[in-house]
Image 1 (cartoon, helix red, strand yellow):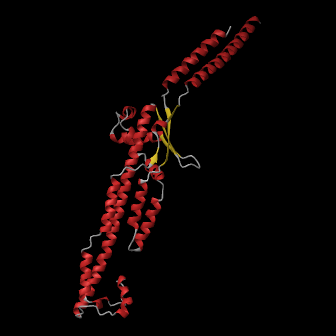
Image 2 (cartoon, rainbow, N blue to C red; image 1 turned 90 degrees about the vertical axis):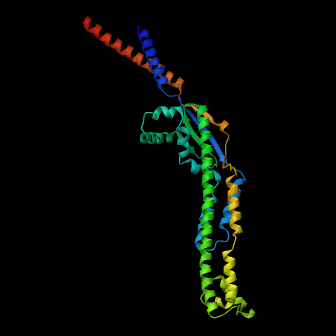
Length: 320
């Protein structure tokens, strides 16, 4: 007698499940694996780092060289991931998509920026244990659009990392120049003082004989007060001053040219193939409808059993 009721309740439950399923957004979990690059152009970057760090003139710059060497020892993949994890490229890539525009169109600029950062949770970077590869996991409603967004993100990350590396090299070279110029300024001040003393004492030519020539090597450390540098004579000292002022710094120009060449060189920081991106549908329609039918059956059976029990009690009371 209760079969029709059970069937009706099951149909109603099925329709509710169908409506619920239609309301759930159709999202895909898109994943892409990126691997370390073996691009030889990155070796050129390390070589320039060594050129900049060579022949440092003081201990502070040697310490700086050590820090820079430690940074450059990181793999290109790790640096790429560090750049990607600021999510700047991700937010820039999704900002102009139709979905995001619909969500933030009616908001003011400040609220738009706050709302944008809520989408950061859509992108995750996963590093499997005991492996060098990273996996980018991106939840999006359209796999084709997700593929384009991921490609844009990776391209922007490469450009920003390249720009960061170029700037880092230029800054290190400028720092090297400043240290060199500072050392030479100190040297020139010292030589001018020694030249003035030699002229005051009328010492034109060197007064240092060959026997004491080994002692003259102390002039390399011009802060050593025990060595009378003016004994070389103001003629030689003035010539040294002239040579220092007219130096062309060919080594620095060479490094600068190497940096400029690197700026015009494409560097493949990581390896990936965008067409290997995997997409899995997050919404399981079959499961939702199956659960709806089962719930409908269970509710229907309980409803019929309870109804029959109530009816039986009513009939028995009337009989008495």
